[in-house]
Image (tube, rainbow, N blue to C red):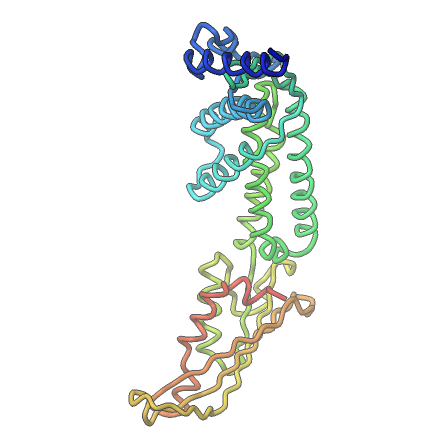
Length: 336
């Protein structure tokens, strides 16, 4: 019998025996460190995983560690009293979840890998301090960007803070979301300095609108000016009757409105519009500082309809108000 034939018979015999025994290893064949994984400790996370490939087994072991961090974070967020606003809390939780899911693990050490029954079993550790430092660098990058944005806005007038509020709020949320993750990685991480600064920035930004004084000169478009006052007041700003009422000129915003209108010819077969008049209305809003520096100039264009004649169509404010609601009063007044 040739050597090739002998090898072929031996291979077939091995496959038959393997098939009789089944593909899955018995519990007794599994490594003890997989059946009874060692607990994580203050120095390292322990993780074990299994998969059909070594790479997938390693990834699953890291996913186990990610689950440990997630559990720690959930616990700390449930006990946290720093964030009271429900919407802010929801945003922080969502960003925190994303942060955990996208952690790039460093300080990984494979302790044991076993291949049994076509399955790879992996036991590894992640050094907590190494992981902490890597994640802290990411926090500091976002934290420093936030501080720069805030300081630049604060150096101007109060309206710089108002104008940048959305960007500041988003950056604050990103930093807040990462802090529980750092705490979960290392209980010794002190987030007090970050939290104190974030609270200061949030409070200053939220209170900026309360310091703002707005004077509106409607220039013959009183009904449109009243709407601007209404929504500026709803945002938290103080409406004044004269620029002289503003003690701090850095907090004074001068808004000038001009309105132009002209008849518009509209061809329509809609019987409901028979005999209606159309007006092409343009409202220009110019926003300036107390030193007469133009911050923004925006134009709102609408086409009004009225069965009571052109003058009535030109005076209608509903569509103008709809634009304020759609764009937001801050964008109407401050967007360049």
